[in-house]
Length: 131
Image (cartoon, rainbow, N blue to C red; front, side):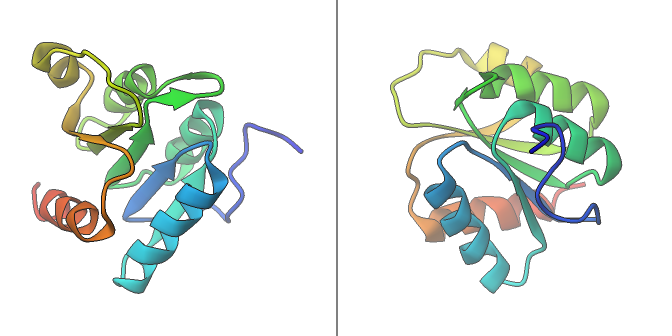
Protein backbone atom coordinates (compact mmCIF):
# COMPACT_ATOMS: atom_id res chain seq x y z
CA UNK A 1 0.00 0.00 0.00
CA UNK A 2 1.31 3.47 -0.87
CA UNK A 3 1.20 5.73 2.21
CA UNK A 4 1.24 8.85 0.06
CA UNK A 5 -2.14 8.25 -1.53
CA UNK A 6 -5.44 8.77 0.28
CA UNK A 7 -7.90 5.90 0.65
CA UNK A 8 -10.79 7.70 -1.01
CA UNK A 9 -11.13 8.92 -4.60
CA UNK A 10 -9.77 12.43 -5.11
CA UNK A 11 -12.77 14.71 -5.20
CA UNK A 12 -13.67 17.93 -3.46
CA UNK A 13 -14.47 17.74 0.22
CA UNK A 14 -15.52 20.03 3.01
CA UNK A 15 -13.42 18.42 5.73
CA UNK A 16 -10.17 16.44 5.83
CA UNK A 17 -9.69 14.36 8.99
CA UNK A 18 -6.07 13.37 9.70
CA UNK A 19 -5.56 10.94 12.57
CA UNK A 20 -3.64 7.69 12.88
CA UNK A 21 -6.30 6.36 15.27
CA UNK A 22 -8.40 4.52 12.68
CA UNK A 23 -11.43 4.10 14.95
CA UNK A 24 -11.52 7.76 15.97
CA UNK A 25 -11.01 9.08 12.44
CA UNK A 26 -13.80 6.80 11.21
CA UNK A 27 -16.12 7.96 14.01
CA UNK A 28 -15.45 11.63 13.22
CA UNK A 29 -15.90 10.98 9.50
CA UNK A 30 -19.21 9.17 9.98
CA UNK A 31 -20.54 11.80 12.39
CA UNK A 32 -19.73 14.70 10.07
CA UNK A 33 -20.95 12.82 6.98
CA UNK A 34 -24.30 12.18 8.66
CA UNK A 35 -24.47 15.94 9.16
CA UNK A 36 -24.30 16.42 5.39
CA UNK A 37 -20.61 17.24 5.02
CA UNK A 38 -18.26 15.71 2.47
CA UNK A 39 -15.44 14.24 4.52
CA UNK A 40 -12.21 12.48 3.59
CA UNK A 41 -9.62 10.99 5.90
CA UNK A 42 -5.90 10.34 5.93
CA UNK A 43 -3.88 8.52 8.56
CA UNK A 44 -0.56 10.34 8.21
CA UNK A 45 0.86 13.68 7.11
CA UNK A 46 2.17 12.42 3.76
CA UNK A 47 -1.26 11.16 2.70
CA UNK A 48 -2.90 14.37 3.92
CA UNK A 49 -0.53 16.54 1.89
CA UNK A 50 -1.02 14.39 -1.19
CA UNK A 51 -4.78 14.51 -0.90
CA UNK A 52 -4.90 18.25 -0.21
CA UNK A 53 -2.75 18.96 -3.27
CA UNK A 54 -5.38 17.42 -5.56
CA UNK A 55 -8.60 18.14 -3.68
CA UNK A 56 -8.16 21.03 -1.23
CA UNK A 57 -10.48 20.78 1.77
CA UNK A 58 -12.11 23.78 3.41
CA UNK A 59 -11.48 22.55 6.97
CA UNK A 60 -8.81 20.15 8.28
CA UNK A 61 -9.06 18.34 11.61
CA UNK A 62 -5.54 17.25 12.56
CA UNK A 63 -4.27 15.04 15.35
CA UNK A 64 -1.19 16.50 17.05
CA UNK A 65 0.75 13.22 17.08
CA UNK A 66 1.03 11.57 13.68
CA UNK A 67 3.35 8.72 12.70
CA UNK A 68 5.38 10.82 10.26
CA UNK A 69 5.05 14.37 11.60
CA UNK A 70 3.30 16.52 14.15
CA UNK A 71 -0.09 18.02 13.52
CA UNK A 72 1.43 21.44 14.08
CA UNK A 73 4.05 20.90 11.36
CA UNK A 74 1.36 19.52 9.04
CA UNK A 75 -0.84 22.53 9.79
CA UNK A 76 1.98 24.88 8.79
CA UNK A 77 2.56 22.98 5.53
CA UNK A 78 -1.14 22.89 4.66
CA UNK A 79 -1.55 26.56 5.58
CA UNK A 80 1.35 27.49 3.27
CA UNK A 81 -0.24 25.56 0.39
CA UNK A 82 -3.88 26.51 1.10
CA UNK A 83 -4.00 29.85 2.97
CA UNK A 84 -7.81 29.79 3.09
CA UNK A 85 -7.85 26.43 4.91
CA UNK A 86 -9.38 26.47 8.40
CA UNK A 87 -7.49 24.13 10.74
CA UNK A 88 -8.58 22.41 13.95
CA UNK A 89 -5.71 20.82 15.89
CA UNK A 90 -6.53 18.09 18.43
CA UNK A 91 -4.30 16.56 21.09
CA UNK A 92 -4.91 13.72 23.54
CA UNK A 93 -1.95 14.92 25.62
CA UNK A 94 -1.34 18.20 27.34
CA UNK A 95 0.64 20.21 24.82
CA UNK A 96 2.03 23.63 25.67
CA UNK A 97 1.72 25.65 22.48
CA UNK A 98 1.43 29.42 22.61
CA UNK A 99 -1.21 31.22 20.57
CA UNK A 100 1.37 32.93 18.34
CA UNK A 101 2.71 29.52 17.26
CA UNK A 102 -0.82 28.27 16.53
CA UNK A 103 -1.60 31.44 14.56
CA UNK A 104 1.60 31.14 12.51
CA UNK A 105 0.69 27.54 11.57
CA UNK A 106 -2.82 28.59 10.57
CA UNK A 107 -4.55 26.78 13.44
CA UNK A 108 -7.93 28.39 14.15
CA UNK A 109 -9.07 26.00 16.92
CA UNK A 110 -7.04 23.91 19.38
CA UNK A 111 -8.97 21.28 21.36
CA UNK A 112 -8.37 18.39 23.69
CA UNK A 113 -9.05 14.98 22.22
CA UNK A 114 -11.44 13.37 22.14
CA UNK A 115 -13.75 16.31 21.65
CA UNK A 116 -17.46 15.50 22.00
CA UNK A 117 -19.09 15.16 18.56
CA UNK A 118 -21.59 18.00 19.00
CA UNK A 119 -19.06 20.73 19.80
CA UNK A 120 -16.68 19.40 17.13
CA UNK A 121 -19.41 19.63 14.49
CA UNK A 122 -20.32 23.14 15.72
CA UNK A 123 -16.68 24.22 15.39
CA UNK A 124 -16.50 22.79 11.86
CA UNK A 125 -19.76 24.46 10.82
CA UNK A 126 -18.61 27.79 12.27
CA UNK A 127 -15.35 27.57 10.30
CA UNK A 128 -17.16 26.59 7.08
CA UNK A 129 -19.18 29.81 7.33
CA UNK A 130 -16.01 31.90 7.37
CA UNK A 131 -14.42 33.05 4.10
